[in-house]
Length: 219
Image (tube, rainbow, N blue to C red; front, side):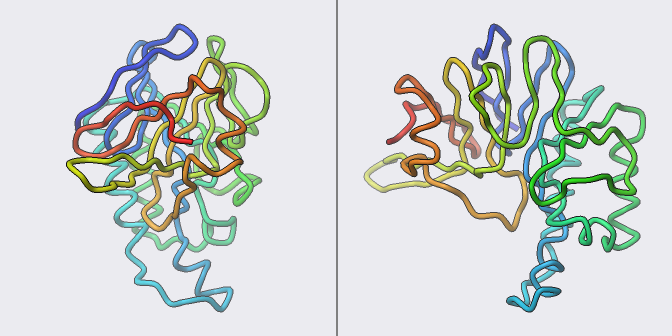
């Protein structure tokens, strides 16, 4: 998987084309907003019946990212499950899959607004994690050095005469935000005030995909 290196708070990080972030110096893989069990949660609440394949696809891509980077530590930045009931109702195959991915490495579940609270899965469940001047959290605040998710950012670029929109990493001097890693998740354009007001005018966007592209954050 192709990746794009950049500097945040003095650390060299890699924005992977699949939407994961890799911190090679610390051997940490970071993903955000897996939203596992989303199709089940929507059906349970009387919504549309979506094909229940998103958990397989999300876990398969996470499995690939882990196999390619061999991290000693995986950090999930919240909303890993679409709600706590969905976490408890994953089928046995998916539960076993997650347990296998966790084997032999540290694993931190950051609590999100969808999954605030512990689940039955191993690892550490915390509201946020601080490490070497970086703060791993779900929703960005004014604190400097935060790495967050929640907003599912996406950016649009003109490629060969046509507009292309992709999930994107966003960063400036103070904040770094990851795109959603989950399969059944939408996105918020960088032109939305929730994002344009959070990031400074020097902010950059790194679009995901086969060949990640860094551009000034569209506003």
